[in-house]
Image 1 (tube, rainbow, N blue to C red):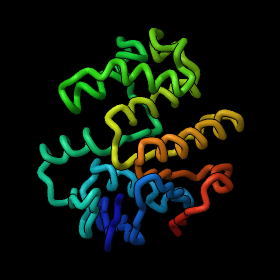
Image 2: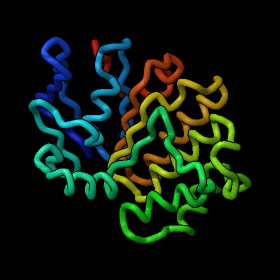
Image 3: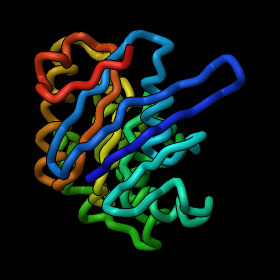
Length: 209
């Protein structure tokens, strides 16, 4: 589970964010919405340890990640946080399966190949495993990102605008998949989005205004 308290962040003297407190349990989904400029992606990057808060606490599984060193935070993130970002950042020379396996190797030093295959099959990507990511559709690439985010069975699954570039059918599929997989893997799921289509999918919502 994750909770935050009195979280603030500043890019500079004129851009300052104060975020409401968050508490989200395992297998629970939270949808964070808000107009552009309200700090949605900034908040997600703080929760994922990609940015450091100016003040406040971010606690994941009773670990205050704000107090960790950079090396400790990198290790903790690899084992406990799954990130589905707007830009997938695949290794272009590796095929789909290798990209997912790489995430397990970087976090644990072990290649979870069979687990990666199982995840890709569950995400209906069995026939795409040995293709390069560049040969996949946008929707397929998004599902590969989800597989990569789940490979280490994270305690926290963070998704930044996971449906913004998808048509209605694929957007619904990805939303349902995220909700289903967070429950299956007992991960706390937080989705940051401006996609109005997702509001009917998730009852637990937080609007940044």
